[in-house]
Image (tube, rainbow, N blue to C red; front, side, top):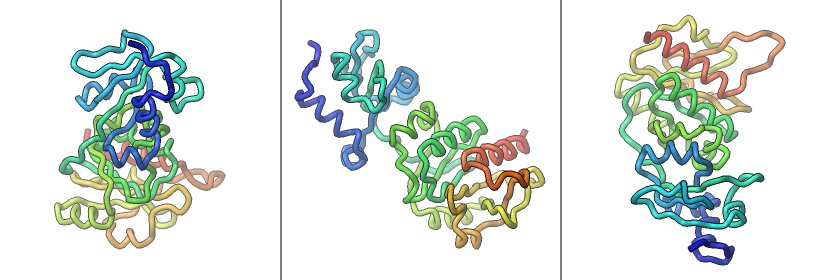
Amino acid sequence: MIIESSSNAKVKYWKKLKEKKERDKEGLFLIEGDHLLNEALKTGLVKEIIASDEKFRVDNIPFYLVSDAILKNISNQVSGTNVIAVVKKIMEKPIKGNVCILDDIQDPGNLGAIIRSALAFDIKNIILSEKTVDLYNEKVLRASEGMLFHLNIIRTDIKDIILKLKNDNYKIYGTNVRDGISPSKITFDNKCAIIIGNEGKGMDQYLENYCDKLLNIPISQNCESLNASIAASIIFYEINRKEE
C-alpha cells in the first residue's frame, strides 16, 4: 500500500523529526539520500526506510512506500530526495584515540566538514561543546557525507572533558592566532586533543589555561584568518603525518 496523504499519522510523525525538539525527545533523526542511507545501514541504526521506489527495501527494516509528493513533503531539500530513513541517534562511547574538541562551532557546514576530515586523518573522537550546532541538523548530515556514523561524537561540557583527558595523560593543544606555534613544528604526543575555536571569536580564552601548547597556522598577511574546518583539517593532517 502506498501512502499518498499528508494527513497520514506516519507522515505527520516523520515531519516532526525535522525539529530538534522532537529529535531530542524521540532519540531519532532523519537522513536523506542513498549515500547517507548506505552509511547508516553499516551501523544497524536504521529504524525505518521511506521511499517511492521498492528498490530501497531492506530485509528486517520496516519499509514505507510513499508517493513522490509525500517524499518531497518530508524532505528538507528543495529538489526533494529519492529516499529518507529514520535513524536512531548514535550512542556515545568511551574515548580511545586522538580527540577534536569543538568550542561553540556554529556553522553546520563547518561541523560536517570537520567530521569528514577527522575520519580521513584518523581522529577518532569529536567533542561538541553544549553550544555547538546540533549534530543532527540536516546541513551537518549532508556536509558530513555520512562519516558521523564512523566516529565517536560526544556532546558535553568541554571544561569537564578536558580535565578528564588531562587526568588520562592527554596533551591538550589549543588554537591561538596570536601566540600559537605552527603545527608543522610540533611533535604531537601519542594521546592528543585539539581544541578548535568558534568561527567568529576563536577558542575561548579561559581554555588556554588548560592547554599544554597553543597552535597557529601561518598564512599570508593578505588573509585575515582560515575557515574553522580548513584549520582543523590542516592540524589533523599534521598529527596524522607525525604518526606515519
